[in-house]
Image (cartoon, rainbow, N blue to C red; front, top):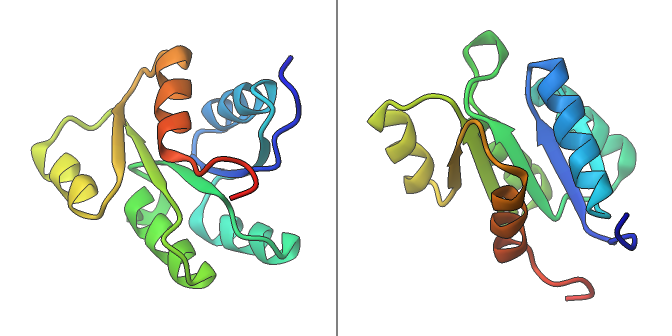
Length: 130
């Protein structure tokens, strides 16, 4: 178990088992975690918390034809900050990947090995206390 980290990670994935697994993994790395199965739920949880996330991890394809890119963009606007975004996807279409990267998102293909996810997260996150 890692020492508690003050950074808050928002995870959005419409598949409950993936959401739970990612949330638990991030918690074992010491992060504070907020999880949501949809964009609106994520916004509600952040509003209730009253604190912006340090980073957002989102599945590319969400419910109701929404994408993780749209969710990240909405949360960035809500927080009035360029919160680092990481899109995790099983979608291999070049349009989806190009879209994500054009919007300043890091993109990882499923399945993502935990050590690789940890490395990418640590590279994109601001250091605690900054």
